[in-house]
Image (cartoon, rainbow, N blue to C red; front, side):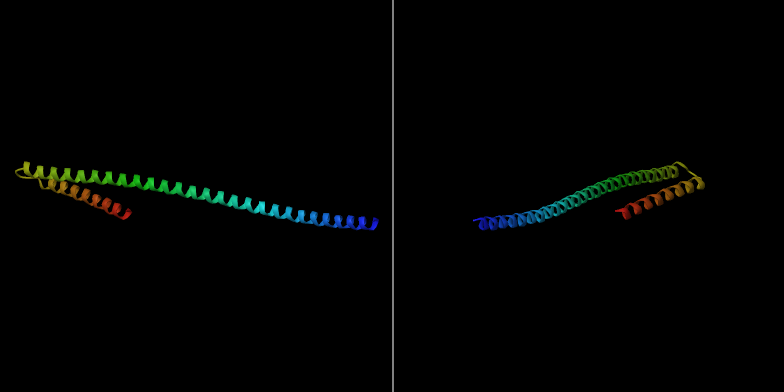
Length: 130
């Protein structure tokens, strides 16, 4: 009986040692898995933050482009109005004068041509920006 009890005790001690080894190995695996999960979570958060920052930059770029287009459109409209006004002034000057002063008409024509060229440049720049 003592021998059988000793064998049972030895067997129980061996099983306990195997269980402790298994538990230690499982514990190491659990720690490694937790580190892996934590690393993936951190990478996901970093990726989400980078995505949000990129989206914010795109929105800011869109707003900047919108303001530039509006400004260019206003400038172009102003220049076109100036051209129309100068042409009208030129035509009125021609009609009022019986003997028109050539230097005045030429100066008005040069101003009108200059403003027209500015309007074309703005229009070209606006077309290229789009």
